[in-house]
Length: 319
Image: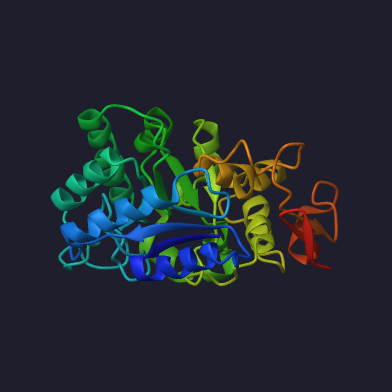
């Protein structure tokens, strides 16, 4: 489980569980950082990261979470061009920043230098661009390293910025469930037709060799179940089959690609690809048994799949 936005006090609860051998889930923390954080907070986050280390299979504290913009539906996602459904004179015509760019840029450089992985919430296409710019600046100032920084959500993007992910080794962390066509009416109206072809652009990412990882964004999603997310990733249709040909079907991906994004790429994102994410000898036995074979069923039946057995750390914990 990855919590992308906790504080030091919340993290201490998990540290106590670990010390008492009471952890029942693998937990990775990303500390929330904004303008209100003090130099003392920065030192605390660094101390907690170093105290846990990078080799503990149960607990990690090596990530920082920023929020650079808002969301499309409220016109707060930061855009390169104005929203389609409000006046260009509206104060939110281009969305808004959640953090001043100079502050964000300097903090990214600071935490990159301290060895943190950085996650940035960026939904608007300009928010995505500014996040990439900050990661690029950090590499220029601190030197290139295998940082595996991420941008979260990426609901809209300029095609000019897609190749930059691979060039900068930045991961695209996205949530298929947010593109469920049954929830998109307000979103589509705000974006307008010009930007739609490259919305939730999973196929564009993969065709440009971008490392794509999927997540839930719980509790800001309609369903935490990854099966529902897989259904949207491969169909771009609701469970009842709408729209008939899929919403922006060019951005659909294969079942193998969707499962990889939900499994091994999550492990890769946290530098744990040698110990989890695949079912093979030598890796941690964390897995589920599903009610049907996702590779042989009609893809439109994906959402009907359910878990019949869960194995954690080589033990059956649900059946």
